[in-house]
Length: 194
Ligand SMILES: [Fe+2]
Ligand SMILES: [Fe+2]
Image (cartoon, rainbow, N blue to C red; front, side):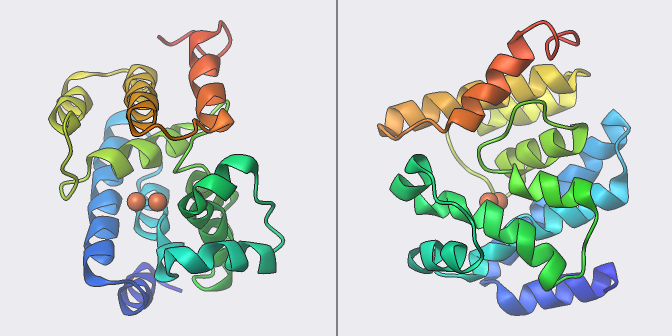
């Protein structure tokens, strides 16, 4: 599929505001990719398709995950919306013909992060938080950081901190992958760029 075809297919499958969000993430990801020397085409495609599994209603995600052999952990069981990342990582190949492992991984990791995230993973995770349609307390601070900081690890650490604080304020469970992502950045091996 060409990128044009992907965009049309996605538009057909997603609700209007979800599609607009996807375009916002794709364009924001390209800007960040330019700044941090990441492949811009991969950033666009990963951003565009990161939420492709949102074509399913939230209530259908657990059944869709089971059908695909995706394991539902304790945290996902309590917050089934998280499953859209893992389902989407399969759908990009099935529906959109994307088999690039870096893109697939960035989509898989876009909701809760992971230990040792790639630059593309980080860019998609962050673009998802700051694309122009996002509106929540603190988003402007993160957008400003994207402009002023030249350190992607500093940006992603701030983003992980904000996510964790948000989840705590909601009284929800913190996904272990988010803690892994943050710890890895603070430890010697992952923190050498901070
Ligand atoms: Fe998402
Ligand atoms: Fe998203």
